[in-house]
Length: 365
Image (cartoon, rainbow, N blue to C red; front, top):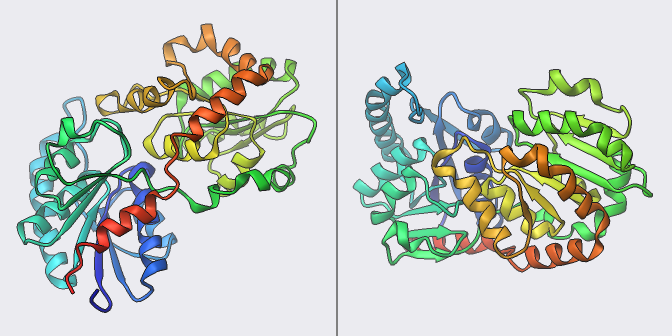
């Protein structure tokens, strides 16, 4: 392999694209400390904060996704995309990457497409069981397509598909031995069960409404709740923090200790969350967001629940079924044991290393 190889990594708009990209960068640096890595993202999205916080340089493109309704932003999309293609070409010419990696989102569409036009090797990583529009567009010319689910050949029509799984935080691999540390870190009582609620970094309105309504139910069951309500909703729900065994956070840094302390987890079904929860191996109630493209969160969750490895509740069924399902997971040890055992069989803990192995294959000596 050549000395000091260079990589451009692009993916963003949501944590589901950003965190896998950062995990890939970290693994590249772990194996090749002299590698140079540049990120490319959308100039007004969260990657512009999260990537520098992780220690990497990033350049922004003027690009945003297509909205489902008619908006001024949609009318600007062709202009933005053309501008992003031109800036991507300039970035690539100046940086001279050996491989360009895309993890989804419209910013990655522009830079990976330009790299393909310039005959630079490209790798795309698809987190979901149903691929996004960007990766479907890029797949025919990608040198490797790293996927997390079976059956993606239906959509990609490429011989370059490799099932690797999704990149996950490496500190989740040994949470079983961190339970006591997690309980201490969050100030939990060891004789009570703990329910963890995750709505994503921005928050999930319907899940937050549900948890607020069910706080008396949790009190009746004598359980503790750690409720990650998201930054959009923290001002609305922080009044419940430290009230009747309830902890409320907008964002959680120590996810390893959170999962270690959890007995039952309630979560959206974004691809990264699903992959991480398979490694964690705790009983999960997935509540997919109905507001994402192609309803891919429901498809992600079904890929798990079809194997009796988690519970799936649609938002429309929460009022009628949530208490029943939660009680089952809090009281039925046989059900919990079966779900935990089954979800662990779906985990792909070496995903990040396997993706980087595919990337390294493309570096010219």
